[in-house]
Amino acid sequence: MVMLERTPVAEAAASSPLRSSTPRVSREASPPSDPILPYLRSISKVIDEIRKDPEAYQAGVQQLKTYVIECIDKYGDDYQYSTDPRLLEIWILYADAIQDFDKVYKQLEEKNMFLEHALLYEAYSLFLFAKGRVLEADKVYAIGVSRKAEPLDILKKEHINFLRQLESIVEELKAKPSKVLKESIVVDPWSESTMNDLLAKINGGLKKSIGYHKSNKVYSAKLPLSSSQNALKNKVIELGCRKYQIKGCPGTGAFAKLYKAVVDGNAEETVALKIQKPAFPWEFYMYRQLDMRISDIQRPSYGYAHELHVFADVSVLVCDYLPYGTLLDVINSYVVVDRHMDEVLCIYYTIEMLHMLETLHSVGIIHGDFKPDNMLVCYPRLISMVFSSACLFHLWSLKGRNHRRYLQKRNKNRAEPGALSC
Image (cartoon, rainbow, N blue to C red):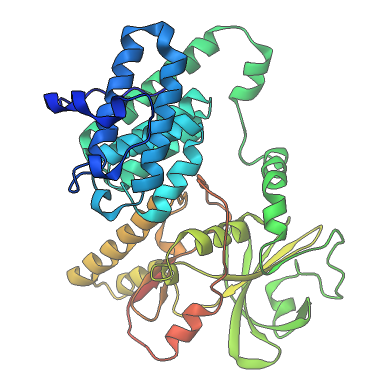
């Protein structure tokens, strides 16, 4: 049970109706300007009694639960208290009383209440840590810091203390000979078994994603998808019920080949096909995470994936095609003519990139391959990120929705030069 420090109150608290045998509170007994005050006084009284007399613990806890639950039922989403830290403390006691801080945290996020208070993230992290969910506790601290919850300096200090405590626990465990520990310390993120294990955990949600198509067979077309660039040019690839005619190869990376293609012979509908061998569904999964986590306003700053076709030997990601090249191309266009990019433009690009990173971090995603050749120039004015298969991410939640073709619709009526897209 979480214990709150008692807040000094006036002597009039002794006459509070909450001191009677019944925990119910009459609305007339509460000052109209502060109806939660009687609850605060009674909660403080019960906590003091529990501290003084351990034998009264069980009865005190039950009475405390009654007060807390009744207060939250009546005033939990009262606008008058939406920024009052006293109500936040009662919410924390409520979470402890029902033993479901996950539910309470979700409720407060949906109500947009107390998200700027560091106490929310400290309490939730401690709850997770007590349950042995240390990685989730670390992420909750990080979310609070990214949201600049106040007091921010204290939250950062608590997060550092938490990490130090975690580090000391790990070091202590390392010092003890344990076969299980030795096997679990080293994890190769690039090993096929590690990726298969992780994908198996998310496979159920991945199958439900819009645009996800999987076959256990090898790609059986006459022309293999792994053919050379020249062999594929102007050829038609059938994926699902659509035909894609290859028009060029804008780029080849260490992990995949990227092709420009028109859909069903319609020159106005151009997409990019990212062909990768062996099959790699991670990137599609991350795009669906972006669809879910990032707001509609910010979402166009990041690439879109329309479909993923996974075969036994290869995968094909169908995504937006942006014809204006990368930020690295822009930089090189100045280098080849021995010129420097205008300082104002440099500042603009820098601000856009930092803003995108800040947005990603605020929703619990870390981009592990942030570089100029992963930044695509697009119209209108925005920078958007490419999530290449070489990227590493930390994930803090799972769900998704699709915004396909959103950027295409925006681009029809706007054409401002010089923007970036990742």
